[in-house]
Amino acid sequence: MNDAPIQIDTGSAPTFALIWLHGLGADGSDFVPVIPELGLPPELPGRFIFPHAPYMPVTCNGGYEMRAWYDILSLAPGSREVDEASLQRSRETVRQLIDEQVAAGIPSRRIFLAGFSQGGAVAYSTALTQAEPLGGLIALSTYLPAPELVRRELSPANRELPVFAAHGSDDGVVAPALGLQARDWLEQWGLAPEWCLYPMEHSVCLEEVADIGAWLVRRLAA
Image (cartoon, rainbow, N blue to C red; front, side):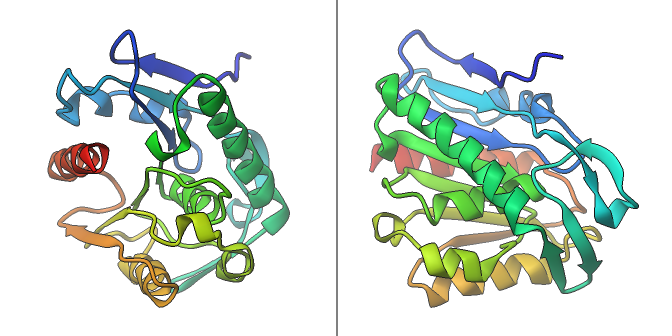
């Protein structure tokens, strides 16, 4: 099985990189179709990287083995109990991908992290504790999985990290309250996340994707 990340360049000389993490049980191909829907102009060629989570037993799913960025020990409407060791392993995987792009010539300030659901939780945990300043974070239908871990390791370099956080108003998998809780935590730590709510369930919609594209264009022009 080839578990190398999917990499797609939209031009011959990418000017930014976006690492996009899928949700629980999916794989890196899940968000590849989003690229053309972002509506990015051709003068902003980018590199899109879609890694695959490893297979592991997931406790909250009866120990069933699936692609997961970390083990979820228990679910509740307003909280998640997660295994921090597996979360940190995934965080290191993302850090390696960031380092590879920096080595390839893309400055860290032109590198963005995005993630949906469990992937968004890893993106939160990585971006907020990354030693080098990043371009921004896109957190979709997700939550902050280990706020104390992030609080302990919050990076001065990303205390002004641009954040686009979005959620479905009818999400029955990750309650909107969990997304709002993450937004409130970020604000308490001095960040100013942009929060958007869409009339959908645990998914993405075209309006949301277009808003992400517009947000990326603004960030890349800053």
